[in-house]
Length: 455
Image (cartoon, rainbow, N blue to C red; front, side, top):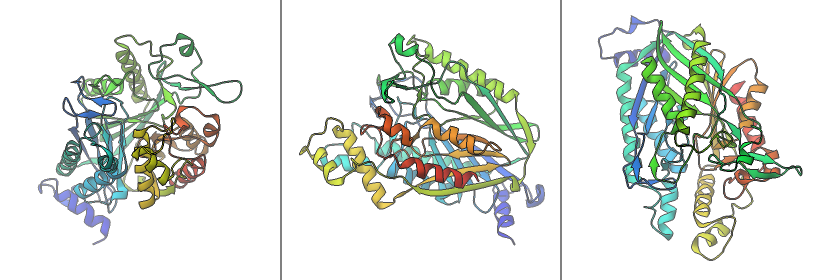
């Protein structure tokens, strides 16, 4: 029996044994949806201090897609980021649960800031110098990963055939703006943070953004099974107060599910230099205003959908590995002196030096990171690591105008921001020692990888 037919037969059997393998044609694409709560407890460490209260529950939600010998698992999780051994453990667990290989597991954080960091390498390094309990609850992290793996495994008993996809897009108004204000000397003069209080900075122009929100919906006949939306903006209105939140993107997602009655998955695009600073007036309900604007764009994108029939020949996953050159400050001896107290660098405080040391160790164990794209007919679901600048998303679209490209960032998070070559010359927070562990040569590697998986 050919491998692909054997695989389909195996998964059809998992539908409970009640459906014969000839219930669907051999070229049928199968899909299952899964979702699980991954909210930390009050008192648990968040990215910026302990959790004091839970405003919104956090979720991991995603798909298992079967269109050839090995399933593809695609996940979006309401955490700030997943790094180093955190990503390794997560991928291995989900690959085992779905009966696939790790290179076919795509896990993206949404990057809400009042949320959890996931890593096991960084806390192990922290424990050499001081306890890591203030920053990581590894017991919770392992438990959350196990629970996600369990729902992935259980979802295989609820596979549905995918017969068509819908693609739509709509402009989002008055949400995103570029964080970097460039002065007359070509350098970053000011930073417009997510909760910028200066009215002068808020009155600056939007700057370079991608104003379009894209949606992809998978259908069984006329029944929508799940919608996915993609938009490039930091999903942050405020943080550091210890109030766990899925932010305005979580509110918009919940609204869509209540309105339409089927699951919705949101992905944060290449939003490294994109925030809500221009439009965040710091009023109490601003996150609901942003949620309404996102939800309105999703409505319009879904209304504009173009539907196309699909079968397994419409799907393909392309992956490649790239090496992202390290920044000059990632010197092991120098970093170890900083974290041991033997050296002081005002541009690289202790905790950031620990993160740099973790990435140095990760790269010297495995120097490559993955870029991938799930092809569905002329749609490309592009997956990028780190906090990539919006330019990568825009350049991909410019290079391949024949494709409908939907970009998700925040897969492997360990290297921090990924600026363009020009951005590293311009300076600013995102390309500083505090934020990026890469050098300007990262652009060449990123674009080479993007071309390889989209072509």
